[in-house]
Image (cartoon, rainbow, N blue to C red; front, side):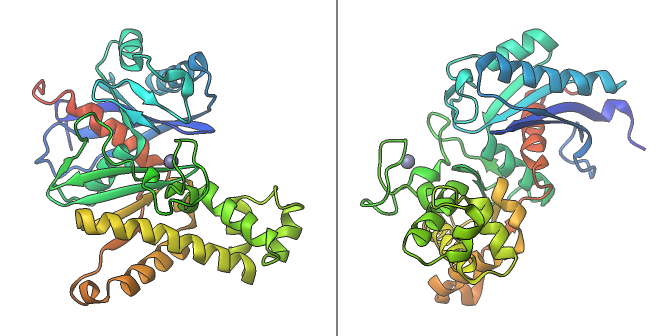
Length: 331
Ligand SMILES: [Zn+2]
């Protein structure tokens, strides 16, 4: 039995495009403890990109978890998509544009009276994966495939943030300079092809060329085709959708191949909405990488895994990052 003095009670919040998930996480004070961090309660609220709305949704979710627990909360962590500076202030936040430039940490700290950590959501997934895989020394690349692509890098056991805190944003690596325009100002960014939006675009391109009649019939129009329809029909066994999904997985693998050459990670964790597809995606990506790197694959293969805990991984990672604020103040 673990006594109250040996555990932390931390709230982690993952702000998504349509939903904000908060989780109350119990974790050991000491890293040497055999106890694993555990999600004990969760609260889901709808999201909106309006500044006050996002802030109040985070507050409402955190307050609900605090009300339901008889334990005092020690810290709060928040994960957001976008460029989050080392000062915890968002420079870009596609799911929460109203929070850009705002000191969310200070606002939440004033409201709840505890230290608050703000970080990139994919950084949170990387930290959660590191904790759950029980490897304090390994190198992990976390990729979130949702509307865009996020990234988090754990190198030799530590989260790598870069000079400004923006490291691990591979969604805007250019993989085709003649490709479609990206809101970031470049053309042919990886996330134009390998995110949920990219999957929809590949589907619309195939349907416009007459290569996806069943997909077109299900969507009703070329414009109506999105990533979810392709995934659904692929899982139902439709040939056209399966071909589009395989092309999509090839683009996921192309970007990962570049990142593997740079980082040589032990494990690549796929999070975000598309992680729910599971083995059908990871197996295609893994096979593509074996085909690309036959020599390297003879000795070892990078493990491609769906993020453990699914959508809760971001919230758990945010809680773990918040708990680092308490290091040294342990009882
Ligand atoms: Zn871009």
